[in-house]
Image (cartoon, rainbow, N blue to C red; front, side):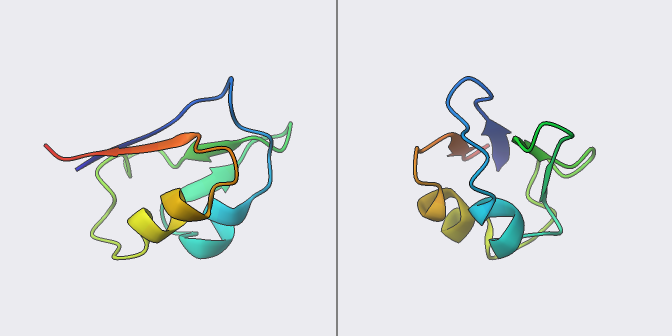
Length: 64
Protein backbone atom coordinates (compact mmCIF):
# COMPACT_ATOMS: atom_id res chain seq x y z
CA UNK A 1 0.00 0.00 0.00
CA UNK A 2 1.18 3.52 -0.74
CA UNK A 3 -0.43 6.59 0.85
CA UNK A 4 -0.16 10.21 -0.24
CA UNK A 5 -1.84 13.52 0.55
CA UNK A 6 -2.46 16.08 -2.19
CA UNK A 7 -1.38 19.30 -0.49
CA UNK A 8 -3.16 21.35 -3.17
CA UNK A 9 -6.51 19.78 -2.24
CA UNK A 10 -6.06 19.52 1.53
CA UNK A 11 -8.04 22.05 3.57
CA UNK A 12 -6.67 20.98 6.96
CA UNK A 13 -9.85 19.43 8.34
CA UNK A 14 -7.67 16.96 10.26
CA UNK A 15 -10.02 13.99 9.99
CA UNK A 16 -7.15 11.78 8.82
CA UNK A 17 -4.95 12.67 11.80
CA UNK A 18 -7.86 12.03 14.16
CA UNK A 19 -8.72 8.70 12.53
CA UNK A 20 -5.19 7.31 12.01
CA UNK A 21 -2.74 9.37 14.11
CA UNK A 22 -0.02 6.74 13.72
CA UNK A 23 0.08 7.50 9.96
CA UNK A 24 -1.08 11.13 9.51
CA UNK A 25 -0.20 14.45 11.12
CA UNK A 26 -0.73 18.12 10.35
CA UNK A 27 2.07 20.50 9.43
CA UNK A 28 2.60 23.99 10.84
CA UNK A 29 0.03 25.37 8.40
CA UNK A 30 -2.56 22.82 9.51
CA UNK A 31 -2.39 20.78 6.32
CA UNK A 32 -2.30 17.02 6.56
CA UNK A 33 0.73 14.95 5.70
CA UNK A 34 1.87 11.37 6.01
CA UNK A 35 4.36 10.82 8.82
CA UNK A 36 7.88 10.06 7.62
CA UNK A 37 8.37 6.35 7.15
CA UNK A 38 4.63 5.65 7.29
CA UNK A 39 3.92 5.97 3.56
CA UNK A 40 3.07 2.26 3.54
CA UNK A 41 0.30 2.67 6.11
CA UNK A 42 2.35 1.16 8.94
CA UNK A 43 -0.08 -1.75 9.08
CA UNK A 44 -2.92 0.47 10.25
CA UNK A 45 -6.39 -0.84 9.44
CA UNK A 46 -7.68 2.75 9.76
CA UNK A 47 -5.86 4.21 6.74
CA UNK A 48 -8.71 3.58 4.32
CA UNK A 49 -11.21 4.96 6.81
CA UNK A 50 -9.06 8.09 7.16
CA UNK A 51 -9.07 8.50 3.37
CA UNK A 52 -12.87 8.14 3.29
CA UNK A 53 -13.20 10.70 6.10
CA UNK A 54 -11.34 13.37 4.13
CA UNK A 55 -13.98 15.92 3.06
CA UNK A 56 -12.07 16.86 -0.11
CA UNK A 57 -10.64 13.43 -1.06
CA UNK A 58 -7.06 14.65 -0.74
CA UNK A 59 -5.78 11.23 0.39
CA UNK A 60 -4.84 8.53 -2.08
CA UNK A 61 -4.37 4.93 -1.01
CA UNK A 62 -2.83 2.86 -3.78
CA UNK A 63 -2.21 -0.85 -3.58
CA UNK A 64 1.40 -1.86 -4.23
